[in-house]
Image (spheres, rainbow, N blue to C red):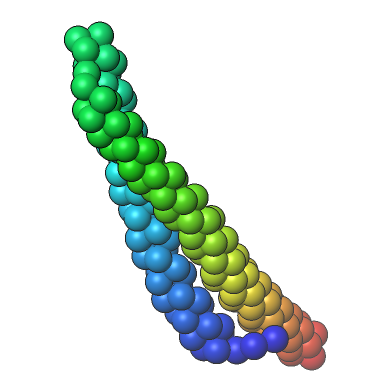
Length: 147
């Protein structure tokens, strides 16, 4: 089994790696949230513009105004489609960052478990050694008392 100092070094390295993975996950989540917010703003803007378009239709529009409204809504729809792609991409990056963080955390926990087992094994050895010394001491005392 690896020495305690080697395990401590591995635990320290794994902890640093986990901390970095946590930061990357946090950045990915923030980026995803921002992309979601932008998508929401675009969708809200499109809805507002569609209402204005409907109001314009009821009030009467020129052919040029009607065409301009149509073209602008198409541009907004195109922007929404692009932002939906950004959201899906950021969602994928969040999933990848989460998986990387989980792998780092499992590794760190594994090293911690190994270190705990190594300490328990060493404590058991010390306990047995102490018991052996106590038994030998008691045996000697008993031997000398019988003489």
